[in-house]
Length: 235
Image (tube, rainbow, N blue to C red):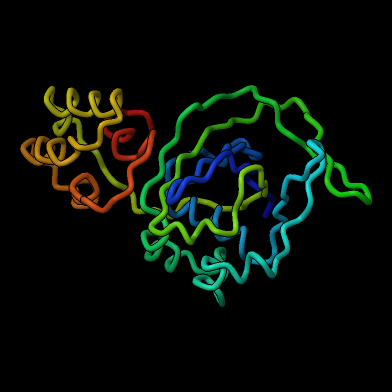
């Protein structure tokens, strides 16, 4: 199976990871999926994926030592499993590691980095491509799951989403629901999430996953979060 995505870490702050994700296969899709993100993170610790690290020379990257990644807290938590062989486990356990996923800054007709190798390491060379890109804002359940990562790291992934389909019915999207959702999206003030959940329930929304996510006081919420994108029709 070919690589579907290329990822580059933009920043890490406590339990928040920001990555630029480039689609390497036209139909791979860029979606705010916790199971897809678990694949992305799993690839960094499985010992089979080349994770490249920045050096002092801007066009050269070196490989992250597999032993270092596999001995990290995330590597130890996933030891003995392989992401592409147990989709049901991925689906059932994504929430143990990934709290929330949001996507912003989507674009097409971008520049994709390619690489050539010399005895000094990987060299980054820009190549024009019409690949889609987006910035993923990822919240994890514990900052230790990101300990082995650092800004500038890059890798490829064959990941794919395995989330449960969440239906959304037009009858739920009352004027009050849309007004509250738009306000949350524009202000980034997440304190109104339970109010939005109440408005949805008053409109006869019966999606436990959507309502519980909005009401969960411990959930991590990020820009471009899936729940608002779903309500506002951005997915």
